[in-house]
Image (cartoon, rainbow, N blue to C red; front, side):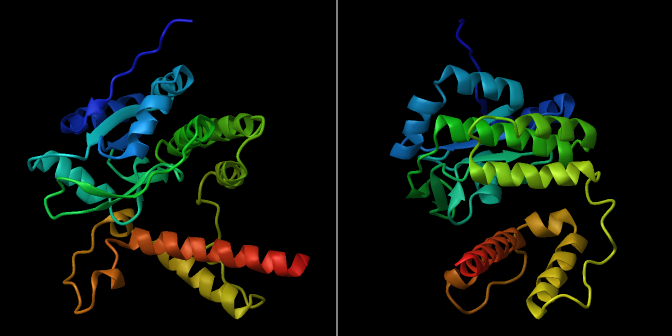
Length: 267
């Protein structure tokens, strides 16, 4: 079998990558690579050199790399880091042609901004992203892009149906794929009722429903944009860079709570 070669597009050519993403209808695979991080070096040596991984990247995405270690200030790099690295952010992400983040690789190394000029980042977690997890995440992310960005509901539904037949699919990947398959079957959110509140809901259910309705009403730019108001008087740990971090935290809290309730009922 011949070797598959692909080249990471340098972050300075991100405009070219976004134009290519828009033209070929593929998402951008964004990799924040820190040579000083052993977890990042492991990805390079064990994952991105693997033939199956390289072939999957070539088929599913436009690969863009940002070298986070630097001796000097780089404005183009700083803009990307400023938009995609916050606190505990994955070093491997998927974004669309407009630069909007929509899928993360959970077990990738995680970073946090370290200085005001984005010359380096803090390595919070070395990660243990496996070849199997990477390929499954990349394929699912590609389908999510087809569904939510390209709006090809029928094509995404077919791909999700086939994807769910993958042997030994990671359970968390399977759960998400099933969720998106249902969305694809109903043509996105267009068939959703105007309100999801009803009188039979518990107080907790009503509260979650109100939050969901408020989030659906917010423009995507408001959710993903940086906080543009003055900082308050308390420490940095009282704040977040944007609403997205709050959404993720809330979503995880709801998931954890529902699992706890399910376990309590089953026992």
